[in-house]
Length: 214
Image 1 (cartoon, helix red, strand yellow):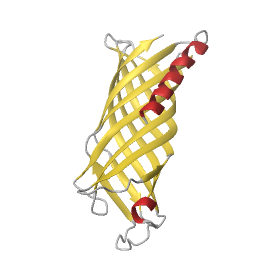
Image 2: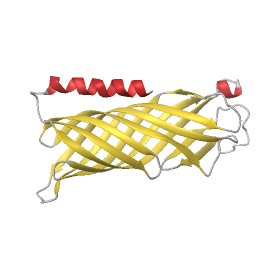
Image 3: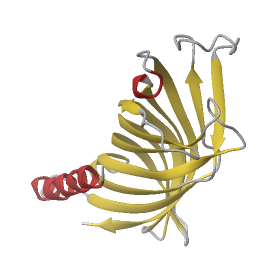
């Protein structure tokens, strides 16, 4: 996973020179804190768990730290497009257990972003903007128990993010991003029945970062 993340970051860095003569560019580095993260599991097709009458299980996670790396290219003064990588570090479930086991979850999101921006004439704030993100979600999960457990297989899914942010002194970034990362957990190695569970990982993240103009 770490090698894959490094490869994506390297690809973004190598793409920068090809846009050098086409418009304003920037690279953003951000540190985030998840304040309302949770996993929702659809158990409607899970064999042997009919006691879940509503067919859904939801658990919250401890507040995870995340890091982002983004490259943005200005199509015009008030509109930029970009590529980004968001790595959410693993966090434990909070006050809940899945099938009797505590679990740890994390996700890596690779996305395309659109950022409409309005300039502000202020001594402090440079701009306010909206940001929309769409891309690929790469999940991670493991069960924690007193004995060794088989790992859970995971399948990638769709990532969506929507947020609002501001730039201070044209370099400091402050954002709030609400996101949804869908994936599938393959429980075959755990239960041997080929069960798949659709999972939606939702997050509200506060980001603080720095904008490097190129």
